[in-house]
Length: 169
Image (cartoon, rainbow, N blue to C red; front, top):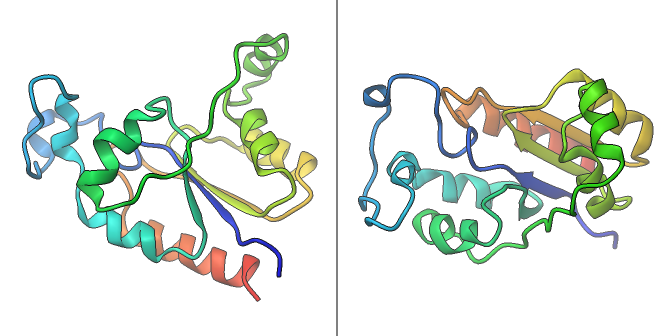
């Protein structure tokens, strides 16, 4: 049996919304410690159950790196998840920036290899979708989340539907 789909998860935007007046966001406990990111209070713990219900392998795809496991996973009730280890800058970065390709796009395709995947991020564009479509042999959903709102019920429905219909027998 082939391995299931990968689910690449960004943090800032999808899980920790930003961009509106700070007072417009609900706060969830426990309050962040003095040495923690103060925006952790915006992390809705109900995301944990909803993420675990998605049919696929959750992977952190964020600049939080292992801090996502240390700071977010416990608040979400998630186990430690694999983390994409971003490569050092390369010669392609300047070209990618000129054409508008997100800096995560190439590394995520390298990480996914031929496996189907969903990528949840707030910085995705049609350029990324077109590039993935032309360079990845398997199904891929690049799902843009409004960073002012974070993941919503509609986002979870769309992700679950795509994962079930596209990637599962």
